[in-house]
Length: 162
Image (cartoon, rainbow, N blue to C red; front, side):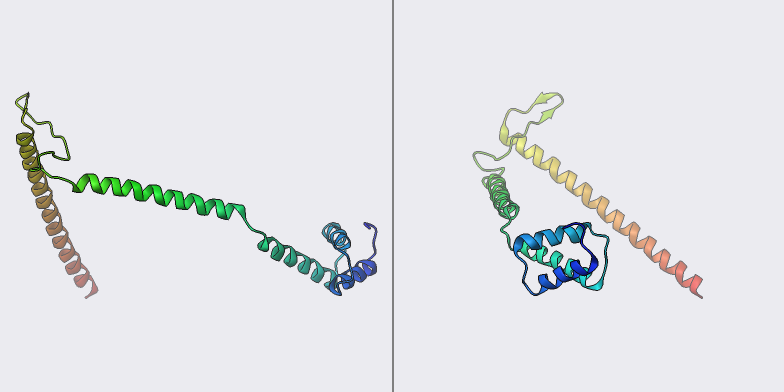
């Protein structure tokens, strides 16, 4: 079927469009059209139709990768929910003043460990509050500096615009 003339190929293409070819003949025509250097409007249209048909047929098949990915995403979501729940339950139960604190603090003063957990927790909380206050003051200083720079930038842009 490889040594076909242009007229023979066009006749087979017409047969394809009129649904007179068997599936085996259609496959042979597809192979010949892929390898043949012959060109015509009818042959190009047939090549296009065969390509579209193959695409449509491929789209109808069930895809295993899709179902596999779906199950993997369900498993990942479940694992994420379990981790988040565990984390939230751990952090929301108890506190500093509860009989069993949810965290462990080791505090050393002048190289000596504070043995009482309640005292260690209070000292750690004071250190945390001091750190937060320092961060807050640094944030406010940074915002003030930014506001001054923006004001200066606006002043400069106003003077250059005049």
